[in-house]
Image (cartoon, rainbow, N blue to C red; front, side):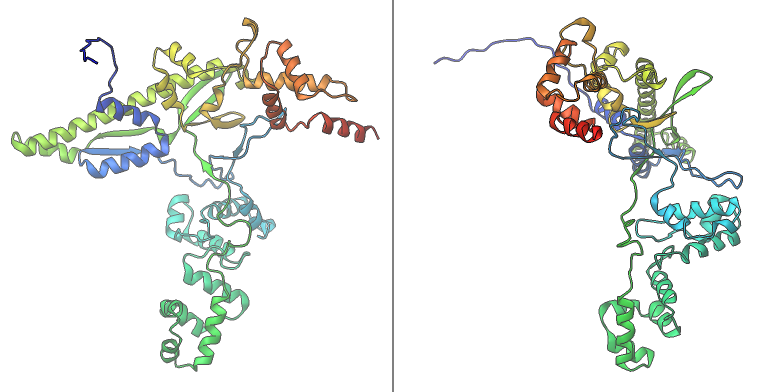
Length: 452
């Protein structure tokens, strides 16, 4: 057995550290990008970040609306798009609390402020914002804010709207009519001793019999440290996602734009840039120059990310225009198609659409949702069939079937094949289930029950 050397020439693409860095930034959504830049700003003194944080402001003339996209399971009804789920921040907890308030005797400004304060409650039902902070955010007087916070604290469950654990327990004791100065002293001065079970120490400090202290401790321990526990709202509500992109239509003209959290301006800190002039040479100068170059490169990466994201989004909007104008369903579209059209690599498209959400006039969805792979087809006419096309055809076949002898999944697959769509019986069953359509036996039973 001999050894031999073979010389071979091959072409291989190797990504540099800078390219990897740039691609990682492209893959970030708006929230991840802001978080990343905050960390970078702490490490690089030359970096200055100015982010548009889209703070919700208060307008006394109109009800507050919070731009938020709710993650929900996809609907499957024909008339409801699987991705048309946008909420205005009126979750079930807000409805529950507002239903208890005497709204009939409130003006619209107070109702709006009350809704805003309820939206600030955390998962446990605590209000971690002070009156001054809420007043500054909304532009409403501290007195009016105090009144609305008081209204929230008087609602059920007891303890809702408290700033911390001590206040939460105090509110619950007051609701029971049990609160007095001794309870107040325990909560303000001896909460740690209570938690540690130091009953004897409490009795000495309060000058009370041990049995009286134990009774009060038992009462406090019967309270809930988390007001929303056991209410069905704890943990709590819907998960909200802020869109990265907006598809909007005005006077028939469509446009694509980045949301505020993606419109981040970065630059070089003037304070540290002046240091470069002091140190014209030496190691300090080289260090500052490296940091400055890092900021400039980061700025180029973010600008490139935004350009790429907008180009891809514009192409998707244009390609799926029938869907957005409600003239039809989604068409088959792949990452490679987009890459070929824009002369970029498919992996770039994959990174760009990853984790990005888009809001449009009648809904919101992941950007990737608008990419639908084509199905195997018998002819060129059906080569661009998408998932939506298959579901539409399947729904149409079932609608026209003989109700007394519904088609089996295999028969449905054969009829789809005749129309140019080649999918298996199991795939048909999966799509049928997604459309909330029963199997042949169930459909027959439903028809018989309806006939009776």
